[in-house]
Image 1: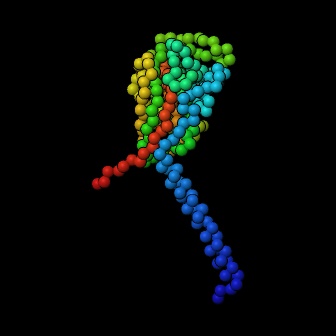
Image 2: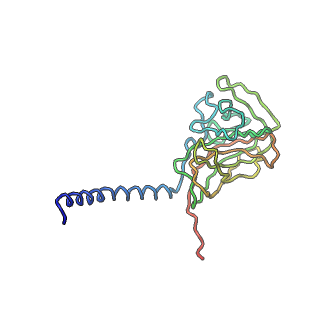
Image 3: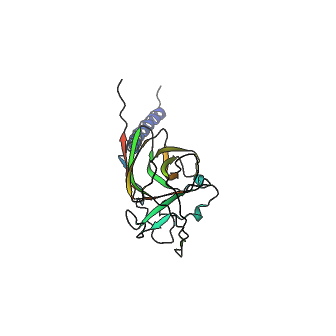
Length: 231
């Protein structure tokens, strides 16, 4: 026998489900939109620094996993436009060196939308080889040049978090052995979810040596669905 209290509970249940259902639908739509964003934009894609006190571009940061015993505060990645080494876009670019002791300078940031399986990711950026590495003092702009650096490749790694050591190599370039700027197109697919991307120089082989490249002007990441072949 249904009592007035039972009717009250039933009415409250129906009301609750009516209120929650639109929230579920909104959440589903947000997830669907998150999965299929057509593009992902980098923050500060031209790698600009506001002044010479900024030796790492604003909104970017290295990952310590590639640095060995080198501390992040000791890195000097920003390069300012000069006649000998002009930036491709704006007044700054960066230099990423890999060293014979296994240290690899790198730079990355958290993405607005993650790299996830089932999608194809494509982006462009500009790279150049430079045999000279200049360590810029953060306040006095002094130079301590080191020369005879060899060409290296550029690799792109995905990380699930900024502190997580688990990562995946997503793609890499050929050897960057040209002095002038050249545009490269990078394409990859992913088997996992990665919220961070890091750009890391890599040696040509398993033998470590001192190598260096310059990087500038990153495009948006274009995202497309992977079409499955029908059997």
